[in-house]
Image (cartoon, rainbow, N blue to C red):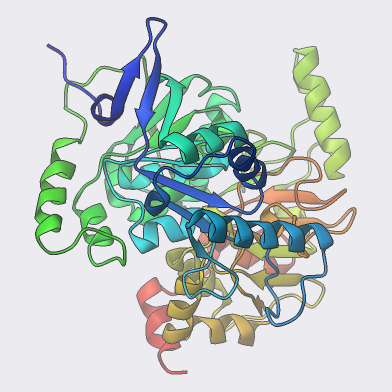
Length: 481
């Protein structure tokens, strides 16, 4: 009998009922929600006179619409204010824990879940947000869901799902200095395309994965969605166990031993079977920069913008022409000749402490270019306070970056942080679609290292050519503030 993957094991444990066509009713261990996708779900409960079945297993947070500047001032955007007020009312009426605008635990939903211990290995977790796949980095089976599905989870603590196929992506080798998990996932999407993962759950494995810390693994799982995957997951190891231990909502005391025993059993078996296996080596990977209007339109920092004439397929040629027109770029332009107006460091992809540490490696002792607006948005209040205790905020402020409050910020521009028409950004977020960061805004996705360097030089540069301190050296310096 063939072995089973971590996905198989968690799916089987949580199966309540399976139809003949394969559609399965899964029990949901954890439900996370926020102000944007939840209002209609709560209204549906009210209309049907239903209660929340397990309010103790649902946690809400304000993140998409929140201002990242002064929290004491009124929210200027009327829709944002209404959505935040609605979440406060709904969580109060239905007895759900809310990490509101003034909570010490407030932050982006996919940042606070892991750092609070709400996300742990072996659980099923859902949220009304596509990037819920992030939580798979800890060995959780996590799905982004729609509003009607959210209502179903609130009312029943279950979810109907069709079982996806399994894709294993094995990453061999060791990343070079200056190359990060963000570069890896952009490169993967460049290779498999934005539809390469459709119908699959992606499992990551390999030497390069084991070398990554938990937060770096979250970046990989976060952006699997941009490759079309249903979700992503990584078998937990000692790094994950150590990361989870001691978190506010994590198992403790006698429960910790029981949980650890379960977590070690759910890892993928060596002979687990998959529907598709892809193997990459990361040894020669260079920093990546998106040039177009989807994450697959990516190039290495040493490359040049493609020429539509070089592509035979008319649809592909048209897509490239449209992307170049929107982005205001010419074929043959070097990536390192592209200037930027705005730099955004943050989001559920790259707003964690190690991301800030990487950006600080560049910012230390340097200054933001005079014509660039650059800001750092920590992914959560916990991350922000930790960074401030370490002194990282002083490095950014001294370099000319704005140090903001947590929220989704310019990643989605549902708040006050957005690009003006024609402005070009270096962004550590996850999507570079047309108008994503503001109407007419032009977005280039990069790592925190590359974004910080773009802020300093006013254009994209190869961070491998910079003399950068280590994370440890940055912390040593920051402790002197």
